[in-house]
Image 1 (cartoon, rainbow, N blue to C red):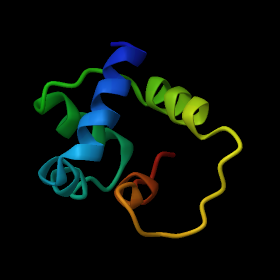
Image 2 (spheres, one colour):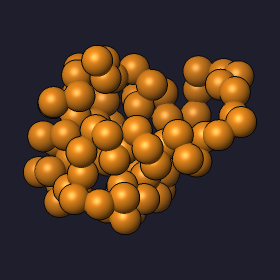
Image 3 (cartoon, rainbow, N blue to C red):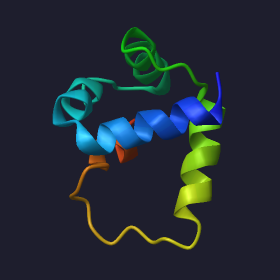
Length: 77
């Protein structure tokens, strides 16, 4: 488990529509992590949150389209 895996996962998801569509099936963090593990990615929700926060510092969500709506729609609590 590492932030390196999170970065690889996010890079792959940005380029791979099939990966994003597969992850859209997740309804909560547990299911999201299980799908990610089955696809070969190993990280915790905390590691994912940290990397996303680091990459998103100062960024405001201005639209609900793009490659990340599936990530915003997962119930992370």
